[in-house]
Length: 140
Image (cartoon, rainbow, N blue to C red; front, side):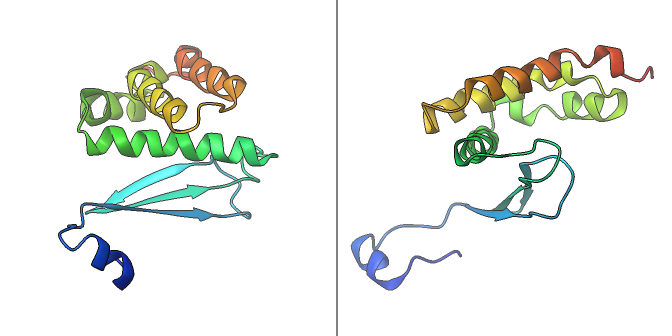
């Protein structure tokens, strides 16, 4: 949606479209929750509550959503952690999560601003997995 609904447009006549985020839930997908994809000015977050993360509560679901929105905010700001293509490439090639740990930390920091009472245990566990991936990393 790149245009405001009429009543809102009347209230903000000079508002210009910048970007949008659409959120989807896929209860059949068995992979990782919270994939964020960006295509042009459109961004898509797909939450998979029955996937790897096994999201059981609303609070956990909103925690994952806040984290993904944190990635989106970082990307909109073009932060160094979010735009480091070398780190993303090295993570993809080696499987070593330490390459993307700065971007993950930044997304969690934003998530905490969005949802101050997010599930801290989920945050700690998610960050731990990125730091502990050396044992699973592939040698180049």
